[in-house]
Image: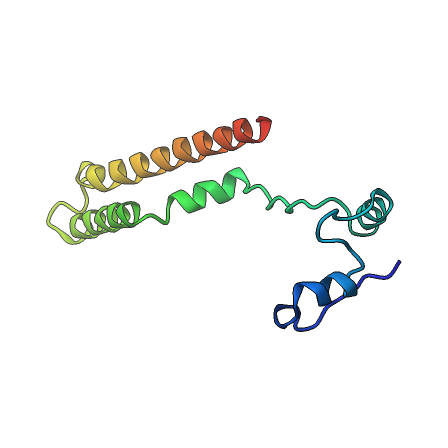
Length: 124
């Protein structure tokens, strides 16, 4: 049985398509023809997209607008303190470091949660 490709199928009538595809609009495919099509083409299912890795989820968490804004604020805080009068004082960098740590922890927790939610969804 050969696979039929119908060119300009949208321009053909139902009867023309019925004849070309060797089917019956009222009864559908015969069991044998349906089994042949299944063997030839496989089941009529969509392919599952690849599951994102935990690292990819983590990186995606860092691409949100608010997260980027917080990272810029952390960099600005560190730069301002690095060029200010207290640049030798390690405590002057605390705000920038704290923002970085909180953003990274938040992204890690969010990625882990999303990864687990994806696992739970797959189990269904």
